[in-house]
Length: 77
Image (cartoon, helix red, strand yellow):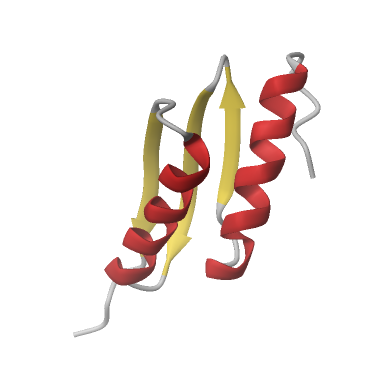
């Protein structure tokens, strides 16, 4: 679902494209775009998933700036 607070149609399209691509990598991953700057946040189960999410985002971003606010869930000892 596109962010209703984004006014630039290009940002809306980019957010939707990135969101579609990361959807299968983990629940709770959120994407927002403002002025072409992509912010990805949420919590994933492991570092491999975090890496995979960022690889996908970079592929869609096409050189746009990305802020990675993804956290890895605490691993039990």
